[in-house]
Length: 544
Image 1: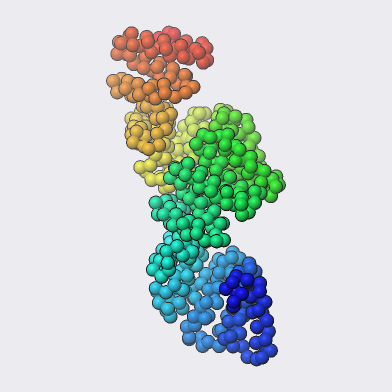
Image 2: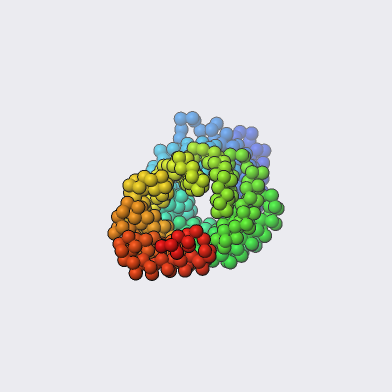
């Protein structure tokens, strides 16, 4: 027992085993002391990571306890061993079996000790952990919140057991994207871990969760800083070549890419590639994930050929290593399809998008619903390009329904697809319905925190065209002028500016403001000729 308290678990284990041998020599009867010795042996084996061995020891202890204690007697000693068996099974990944031991132990502790006892809180915590592993997020939160309340009332501030519950609870709130609740829990747990020995990996995990939380709410610099702290700890404890370091570098790379810091992102991904090659070799799923991220960066720098090579190799690896209907194959297909779409290879993109949608079928979680909605939208866009309007409507409608389920009808994501449907309706002459949908999109964009000026200018331009076609030129002109103002603030879009100037010039002509019309048309022509020379549209502008 002294060795165990000093954490000399190997010495303690030897002593307990010697004690067990002497007990068996001294008496053939199995007693409570014999059971307790088996239990202590199990504890030492668990501390040494020998979970299969400790399960055997706990089983022996439990078998004796159930013999010597009447079946109608609630035994705290039996509950203790059942609780420890649950912990060992959890370590071995046997989640359902673990719950089968945690639950009776918890019930005994509640009945004998009451609902405010620490042992009951420990049971609640571990039942919550099982629910966490089963994906029963709300049930897990109920257990862990109650466990945390009891622990805080019984233990000192900064106790590691409180931090442990805060840690697990925060990860659940992050899953629910309740970041305002998660971050204070993480900071409290981190404050506790910082003052304790042997908690480096726990601190690192907290920094990972903080990084994820900050990235969800868009505080990217804080997210990157958190991941950097995690990486520093992991490198010191696990070494430079550990996969855990690669996982953190992957997140840093994604965040760098999202802020436009593409060189730093590629540096991070290069280090991930080195670690993956050392640990996994070439034919591994992690390499496919990395290729997708590198492909996204290549797209951002307009290197679509390299992006295409990355995506097709990622697709090959996923098709080789996953079941044929795995959603990650659908994700890779969508990326390949987008490159075909950008190349105006619409029949190819349509075929690939349809294959991806066939894998998603009936998506049953928000992530898959969102991805399926995105692919349906892309499919509709390609169908519009080949004038397959009826099927485009069906694709957009499915995307709209899925986004409504994920984001709600008052979301920007819903309005974005509603805008696509509006443009499609305008294409077939349903102008009034188109105007209503596009106006809704513009209204949402103007009040949004996420100002995407390119989408807003396109919507203003489309609405201006519709108003002009409906002979509402006084309503059309300010819309087109606003679109022009936005496009003038953007880089490398002379053709888009020329397009708006032409329409504004036409409206001034209709209003008999000939001088204003001439100024707009001349600038439109000059810009177009500087990019594409004398084409058919330039000819129309000359004629005007």
